[in-house]
Length: 285
Length: 239
Image (cartoon, rainbow over all chains, first blue to last red; front, side, top):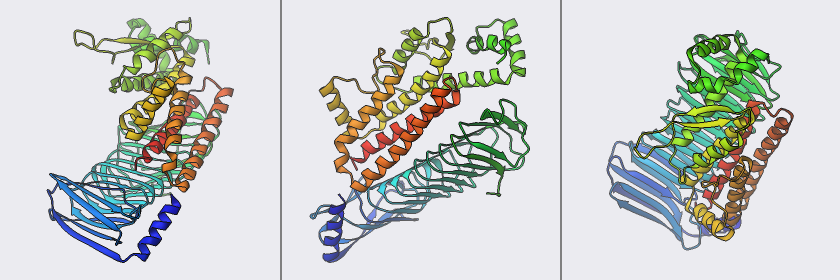
């Protein structure tokens, strides 16, 4: 496959570069799918019910665009095999995006619709997103900013970084760190197998927060006055707290214990099989 | 653990079922106020029952839970079995939901937690898997006569259930991996190895401390991660 990509890339370089630049009138809530892309994808928004598709590609490549009601499908094909096309899309602010880009970095800025992105080798960068947001990468980092959505962000080999998010959050990676900064959420699940997890955000009354890692450290910063029952479990992890805590069940040697902050309204689960668990104040991480 | 705690822990599932009389309920609640260990076990029982409820509520062909519950019930009929009523049960012919009882012994409780998580992943895989995965799964079923992971016969053991699900996904992946870039395959193999190492470490720790609920739950989570990664990898062959 790599040889195929290289051959296609060389072929594209040798071919005359072409540009496709098209404007399509669409409904404001258009659902846009961009599939099979190898190249870079950049999506921005505007307050117009039109989609602009700007694509840089070789002469052997072609860009296919089809509008069917509120569904706009965009794809690329090449007579030489794999098409390598750089896309710049400008879409209505409320558009929903479904991007499947095996070999591409995807950057989306300003959308207020649903977003679904899947890459194999490439980073995902999202600023915005509402409703449902699902971001999955195999080899690549996932970075999310200012999203107000039910968010699912996952990588296999990469970091997941979420900043200023509100709504439910699920963040997971196998080999990488998870960082959740300044989140406002009542439902958070973050997990890594071989990486650290950092949380610096408010714990809301009645919320549920789960942080689980195997070989990494947990660093959890909570606000002064947080109300939560904190459940700590590990096989061989060390626990450190900068807060005054009084253990209620088990003890630190037993590696399973819980304690209460304030009224205990929320539930925080801290689990590291073999790392360090550190509970501290917000802003100190 | 004190004898007192031992005695009350055997009644916790009845307490959850609301089957203790008012005097016993009051006595148990008094005991719970002063016994952190019993409160912890009660919390874990509630978690497993809640998780079972979520699985029951998921639409799945063949009513997965029926076979699992019947098997667990059959295996858990010994003297140490704990009854836990589950009121999110099946719908009767009259259209009303009927209470259902599930019986766990303590080791079976842990096994059930593992199985429920693994099967949740299996159901999700069936619901969300790519067409290629489904085609390959059907081909596997036709060729081997083995049942898909979401339609588990009650005769299998809990352990075999999730091992079979993993094996099935690995076969799907083996059939489709030539469609993936070699670097991607290497990345996935290396990360699967990381998860396998975590699973091995959890199993090793569990062997030394079989009744450790955290380790059981942790192992379940690691297996779910492996199932999820295999499912996603199988779907990647469709991209």
